[in-house]
Image (cartoon, rainbow, N blue to C red; front, side):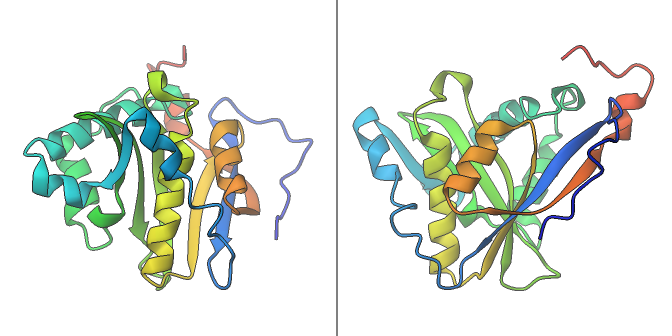
Length: 208
C-alpha cells in the first residue's frame, strides 16, 4: 500500500519526501539475506551489541554515544543535525527507556574502534513490532557492506525473538539506506512528506 503524494506539489525547503518501509517476518525466507556478516571477518570487523560490549569494555557507553552522535549528524537533512544530542537523552533512549533494547543496539567494531551501528526500539502500541531507528557507518568504512551486515543482524535478532514485523522511515534521497533495506526485503508501505519546520526558523544553518 503506497498512497502517493501529489507529484506536482513543490516541496518547501523544510519538506522532504519519505517512505515508510515494512518487513513482514512471518514465513519470510530471509536466511540467505541475513547471513552477510561473515563477509566482514577477513577485514577484522566484527558485529556485536551494546549490551555485550558493556560487559567487556568499560568505555562502551561513551564510545557508542560518540559513534551515534557522529552518525546522527551525517543523516539527512544534515542542516537539522548540527546540535549534538545530549548524552543523557541518548542514554535514556538507548538504555533506560521502557522501549529501549540494548541487545538490539548493534555495533560494528574494528579493533577497539566502534565504526558502525544500527538501532531498534519496541513499538509499544504494536506488540510484536520493532522500529528500526538510526543506521550509520563512519565515512572511512563505507562501501564494505557494514551497513548491510548490521541491518541483517537486527533482522536475525527479530526472528530469534519472535517479532513479526520491522518498520522504518527513510528519506527518499537517502539512496544508500533505501537500497540496503529493500535488498533485505523491506517494502515501501507508504510515501509521505516529512516536515522539519525548524529548518524554516531564523538562524538555522542551511548551508549543508
